[in-house]
Amino acid sequence: MNFFALFRHTIISLLLFTSFSSIHAIEKQPSNLSLQIAVLYWSMDIPGQVAMRQGIEHAANVINEKAKKDNLTTIQLHPFVAGNGEAGIEKQIQQLDKIVAEQQMDLIIVQPTDNAALAKGLIKANQKNIPVVAYDQYISGGKLASYITSDNYQAGYLDGEYIASKFDNYYSIKLILVEYPYVSSTVERVDGFIDALADTQQNYTIINSYQAVTPESGSKAATQILHDFPKKHSIDVIFTVNDGGGLNVVKGLSNAGRDEIMVASIDGDPLSLKNITENRLTVINSAQFCMPLGEETLYTAYDILNGKKVAAYKLIPVFPVTQETIANYPSWNGPIPQNFTKQWPSKKPLWSGQVHSPNNKTSKKMLLSL
View 1 (cartoon, rainbow, N blue to C red):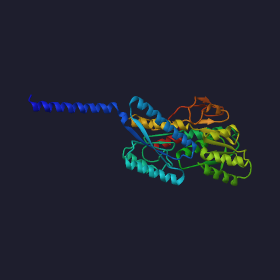
View 2 (cartoon, rainbow, N blue to C red; view 1 turned 120 degrees about the vertical axis):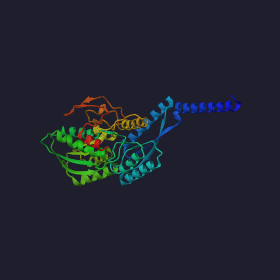
View 3 (cartoon, helix red, strand yellow; view 1 turned 90 degrees about the vertical axis):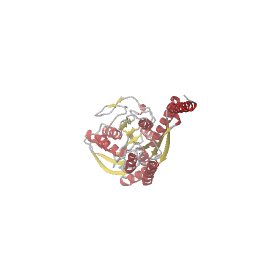
View 4 (cartoon, rainbow, N blue to C red; view 1 turned 45 degrees about the vertical axis):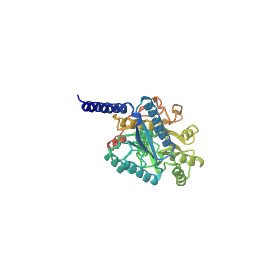
């Protein structure tokens, strides 16, 4: 072999060695890369939603600590907050459109402000192969990589069966609904509540309905209820779809001396639980595990980014907090407690704390739309 041939052979060998070394270095040091996740939050005005965000961020810290220890890929969260009302819906539409157009995110997590408003944005994300995970509310259009939420139908159902246990079946409950028919969670809660009354053969009459999911709208609803029904015993039960609005409904009625009214609510806000222990109108609150819900959402998103198969739909159980059960509920930060037997008549006497897939007609209909 002459000098030039030897020189060329040496150079090629060095290049191949350098190339293989570089590939090996990338494989051994993936921690130089971070997966980028946009997180679109609805609002930071409702405490339960704040707790969900804390769950997402806590899970991110757990993932990153383990990733750094094991030399694996970390994640970076990019938070966006929409806000309440029509302005919040419009802002979230713009946020999603901008994120999808820029194509800098590996995955998008979103708590929708409206079921229908984000459909076009989700379809655009699908077209660009950006996976989208929704939590708390679903999006009615496009394809979600996964949807994680509290079992909202169960929440309404638990409230309904407990309320039914307080009345004779022949008596027709004078019922007021404080609802919000624009997102899946609150619609399912009303469906569950009404179905429970029907399943227990409890007579009832809906004497009026109001809309409230925020403190401001809750105060307005309380004022209007007192105006519409000024006489004591003109209302038996008020079902509020969340504590965001429900707390101020209870406050307004309590301040007016309307302590003859029973209130059933949902969320598990500590102030609402205090109302139960102090006999202030509220008799049951189907409490969420908000922080575990947020954690489950991020762990699901991380699995998707790592190519793992995940369930299309996950339901986090809710806990029926009453004076009989409140000692067993830790808080909406969790952990989810062990199973227990309810102390009131129920078609399903055993409460289960297991994360599960849909098993009721309302959730199945929604699953078909995902």
